[in-house]
Picture 1 (spheres, rainbow over the protein chains, first blue to last red):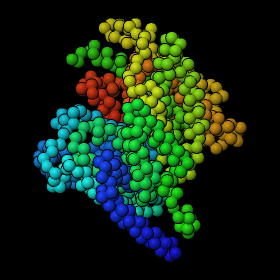
Picture 2: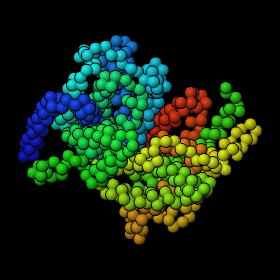
Picture 3: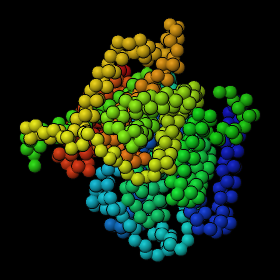
Picture 4: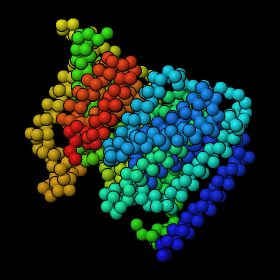
Length: 330
Length: 293
């Protein structure tokens, strides 16, 4: 009983912290007027959202995917193709991309979730790479040349803005909040407990009546849906997509790394990781420019090694309350 | 045009390429079999081996094939150091074990790629000359490119050497025993850490040989490892993780499938053939063709 009320307290506190953080972030555009910094903020929030989506499958359910670029790219391509070829507004395209990606995640999950550990991770890399190669050679969607989204006017309906980046900021803040809330709800539900059981010990979970396979499928579908919405957003934001810029392996890695740095399988890990990693990468890249090419890679690669070895629970564990840890022993 | 000649030609090229793929992949498989760790920096090991070959050729003015044993020795040292400095600690992780192993080696891959960009610039380089160049054989209308032929021969020799090393030496027996039960070997006086260090050295030296071979006919640039690494993972997963001779068979299969795909479909899609075949196989055999359950 004691533990239950402690957990309820903790969850209430998490929600309050979340509301405060979101409100504080919402005031940022009033303070940050520099376009470059706004850009960094938008990318940071986008990776917080993407990494949170990755975390739902990789962190909570323990299925380490390094192929999420596939869903990101599918989201970007679905909304873009629907808009440029059929005049469908990006909002509908975004939903369509999300549903399509979730369906594809289920279709791929059916065979792939039989694979364990490294076999699963490698299969995800291979599937995403296959998708990338197919899009690279698919003329109808522009092949290697990609698709330019024609600009009409600054318009919420068509979700295009040339003069200001602030609407993008609020959308991506909303997306990051939605992924956080979805994770929060899942964490407190039956699914959350099931998924963690699947992650920790699938055999034991199975024997206790946890639907291991269904757990993995559900996690994959939710994760793919949000990732694809992020992809549609990115396409609107940069207004030009090609396979290299939305489906390459680099995205799969960039979605996983913030969660790894911040703490996988935690509520705040992905956001914290993105808040460190993305500005760090952007600033080192612009600081060193062309002369020190590779310096950004060296810095964040080192960061990843050090965190993985020294703090496998992620940086978020530095903030965990000692009181709670004592009350709920591992 | 599909004629008997083009079919035989692409099968022969596929076989040569496949033997080289097997040599690239075997070190990965060896390390996995020994200690259940997948080195996600394997492609970057290949990349530095290619740069090392390039450097030795320029510095000592020797032929890249003669540089191969030196490169293998350098990579042996490098692999052993990577184990001692990084992997040893990754294996001690108590939380998120699988994740730690994946991302510790991925972090290493990112650092190595960044260092290569910084030190060598992203420019494409190639070895100025080698005796393998221009000495191509052709028999009965079938053309045998010398660099690939030499690479395939080196690969076969390496597998023969590996066979004797594993089956006929004390080190091989220690390797085999540690892979069976890393806990129990301590009781018979085998230092587990020493075997792991040597195992990483051996795995890296094999990819070192592969790098020297690749450097004779492929461009050298910081991201060169990425595409070959994926082929290596597919080869190892197809053969069954940990199965050294599964890697040999799988490498040859991958080479042949690649050549056949390139013959029947646009060459840009040749990797899709490999990936599709791999996915089809693991669907029915989740642990690969020769993997143990």
